[in-house]
Length: 67
Ligand SMILES: [Zn+2]
Image 1 (tube, rainbow, N blue to C red):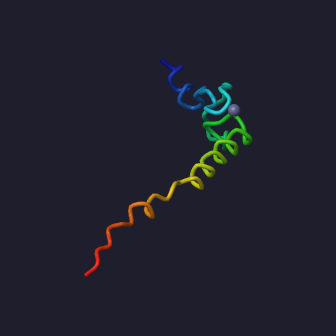
Image 2 (cartoon, rainbow, N blue to C red):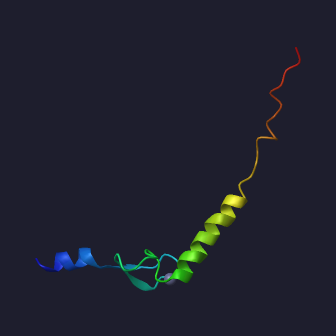
């Protein structure tokens, strides 16, 4: 059962961005992605979605009652 050690040290995973096989290890600073590019692309998507957060508070602002 010495193979288990190896799989923990360097697990082979698939890049969630492009599906390429890459290693999950400390040396891979852009894990779980295969490359810096894939990581940046994914982060870019997240940033875009953050920017697009819809502001629905102004729509339900009819809570004010006159005295
Ligand atoms: Zn990739």
